[in-house]
Image 1 (tube, rainbow, N blue to C red):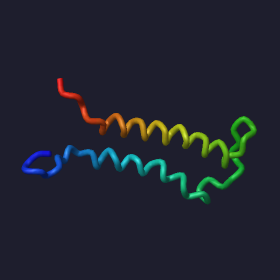
Image 2: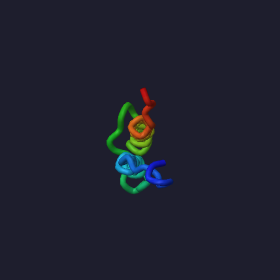
Image 3: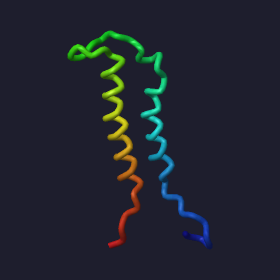
Image 4: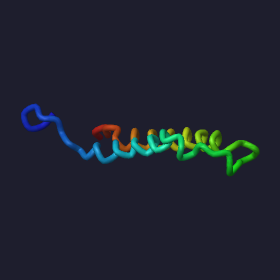
Length: 72
């Protein structure tokens, strides 16, 4: 803490906004279709699977971007 007990602001809030990207998949009517198929899987299923990996990547990126750096 700096300045007599006030927490430091290091711009972490901007990185945390990226965590809203995985929330785009919550709108089910957006992807509730059968076409286009990928390897025989309807769009509804493979789109959700892709978003698992996208969400994983975004979460890891934000974690490493906001992780405090060691001194030295």
